[in-house]
Amino acid sequence: MKMNNLIVFPIILPAITAIILIFIGKNALLKRMVAFIGTLITFLICMLLMFKVHQNGPIHLELGNWPVPYAISLMSDGLSILLVTTSSLITLLIIFYSYQSIGIDRERYYYYASVMFMLTGINGAFTTGDIFNLFVFFEVFLMSSYVLMIIGGTKIQLQESTKYILINVTSSAFFVLAIGMLYAVVGSLQMADISQKIKDVDPTIVSIIAILFILVFATKAGMFPLYFWLPSAYYAPPMPILAFFGALLTKVGVYAIMRTYSLFFSTSNEITFNILLMLSIFTIIFGCIGALAYYDMKKIIIYNITIAVGVILLGAILLTKDGTIGAVYYLIHDMIIKASLFMLIGIIIKITNQTDMRNISGLIKTYPLLGWTYFIAALSLAGIPPLSGFYGKMFIVKSLFNTQHIFSAIVVLISSLVVLISVIRIFLYVFFRESHSDYPKVPIHKMLIASVLMTLTAVLFGLFAGDLYPFIESAAKSLYQPDYYIHHAGVK
Image 1 (cartoon, rainbow, N blue to C red):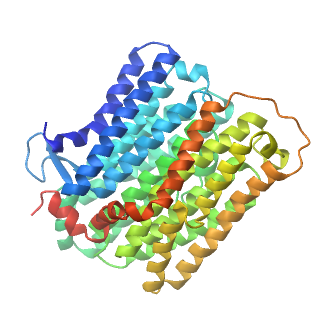
Image 2 (spheres, helix red, strand yellow; image 1 turned 30 degrees about the vertical axis):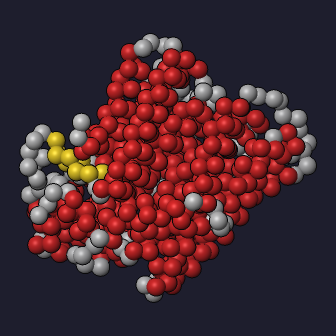
Image 3 (spheres, rainbow, N blue to C red; image 1 turned 180 degrees about the vertical axis):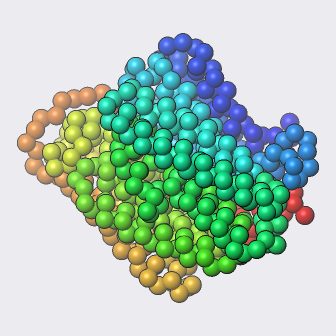
């Protein structure tokens, strides 16, 4: 088998696993095994692909035996394979975490199948080299997310799912409109080919198309002012689903902005840059306000999602080497650490049956491993060296100062302090105040194992950041040198 053909496996393996899960009845134990094994195989193939891409450069596959730009194009460069590998690892640990947290009734029906279809869409969105199929894969994981939003049918899930679905359906309609306008002016759907042809298009038309794409992807990513749906919608589902959403869903929107901006809109004019710059700054500011305003643990971490989105995009849109390296470092870090924190918060809620940190105290005596694991995850989220959040912010802030975006750099630095305060408050309230309650012993060992492993992954990502630098640099190269991506996509 040609190595190029392997890049379809991170997409088709989760899809095949999902189909098997649908047809094996209601045996929860069997569903657990199939979902875990299918994701494990996907992750191992992703690891193999990541090393092959690092050694030999990006892998391009044209489906249907058609030439560029008519073929359906898949492209696995350093950025896409890094994101696909991270997504598969996070999904693997969330599946294990779900054994004690999602509930047997959800397990018996379509929970695991929906998770696998969602991974199919996420991996496809990261891998496709075709703008229309980016839309297709968006719809695949969105439809799966609709099922996960309502599975179990609690009142809050049904209430919030309506808003969530309406927002995403409207956003998808604008996505189709943007693709139609883009195709009308360039006559191509392959992203590398578009990047070549769009240089000859009237800059005013390019700016209009860029604004449409920003509208779509900013909504998906949860950017200001289009993030209004995110806190309540993500609050509704059970914790494994929230961890899945918080770690991965908004990051697909971030990736889409990074990829389309670097290929299509970076050289047209300054309008697109200025819009993304202002949206990123306001996203950080309003995320900080939300993270400090609440005592609800879930909402605090949810608002930290929006802070991270703004920080990542501030680095990415500069299209400097340091800025894009920092954006990639921070993107991977945030995917891992958000999953870790949501999983840890899920354990706290399972033990105490409370989400308001003011109603919880003294857990460090009974659950010291949980407490110190949360503490390490909190420090990592805030970017305390040498943990994983430090390196991405260091490169981003350095690039912002070097390009004279002083205010933006100060906003990022202040946001680090706000993030630290918001998550350490949870630690002090929940674990170190004098306890006035006796919490019942509940089975959490599988949840704790998954959470510790996820946190350990974040710690190792920070400790071995120097060793991982070649992989991060290779991933960033497609952004700050788009010609590198175009060359390997078969476009002359």
